Image (cartoon, rainbow, N blue to C red; front, top):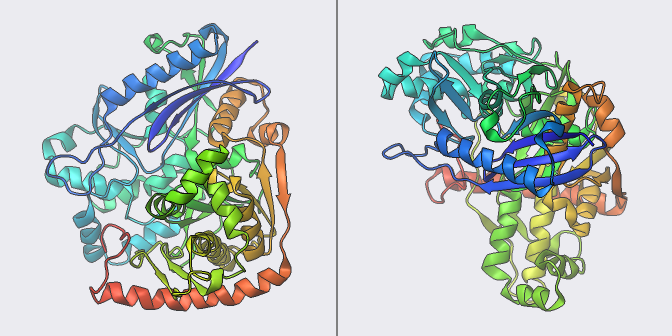
Length: 517
């Protein structure tokens, strides 16, 4: 039996997942990791290469051991990671500086670029689909301004998924889907745009060769990790885009909502599609050649649910423990009895995506009633589910406005898709058919697909997706509910705008603001 290995460097943990060539998960090794704020550097999120490589190797060893697999039987390995995280190297390949995804240390640099290079963010966004907020250029500029001796040594840049492959093979390279999130990139050409760096005074010779996902970049040369030196190392990519492939979202016009701590709404489109002029939506290269993905993001949808559970739902926790079921199942059973619109409750948490100037109102519930039969944990819980779906629908409509792609079917995956009520609410709010995949490890599966392409198991990612992805459930919309939700959505947008004004007047505190605002 032969196998494929996926290395998944997420925000909270790193995993090695082994699949057979039919896409069945065989074993997993996982380690939690943390990304600490650097001393004296507010809003930083450093990535510790030495510690995190040790943890990655531990995962590889554990996956091989728990699956009782000989390393010689691993045909190929590929990687995926949180996007936006970068690693900078010296001329000998030694890591000099690395940050995780939402490192926001470069707040002053973002402001400097906007104020001193008129229209440059819009110019770069029109090519890359990215704003400066989490891009590579402000972070490198921060290094230049604050640690010039280190900056002078910088010879190469890569993303974190690329760094894992470098540690395995000794080859520093990148792929479009993750490198594209650095913002120094062309959506249409699927390659770095070094002139963006030189234009703002940053080194322009540090960008590595770009490979498409699934291309072989070498073999394992660092066998201390437990892998055999005959194992192929194939180019990986960004977690959302490879997760999309693992969900079968590989054709133009395909749509998915990934419902985790954040919700991402992704829509596949031709790579020559021009991003919207208002910079309202992010656009990334997909892992499929000649395709990009428009991406809407809903902040903290899953995290808000966890907060609500832990802050208010001790009774439901006790009930769930007695019944030996998940507490969210108990909450959904109660919320199912609440009418559409959650008795008028208006939750204020994530705004719809405004990528060019993005901040949120203060977290709150509006229009509460003091009648406990109307306003209670069940109705507030349902309102949060409805809100995540409403914001997702608004983001999809924004994508439709510039791309011309109308959503009819949505693949819904991630932890949120386990809730039957939440799936039905998403169908009712959007008016779309909702498909729930069988696979629970879409990102790891997509990464294993890229390894399989390099090993010649699959012709390409599209072929792999069509062969391996199957469906568990399908939800169809209640169109009467859909009509009700149209008005609810309109009311929510009006209420949210007023809540943003309170932030503008320094009366309330924003839930989150992009760096540079």
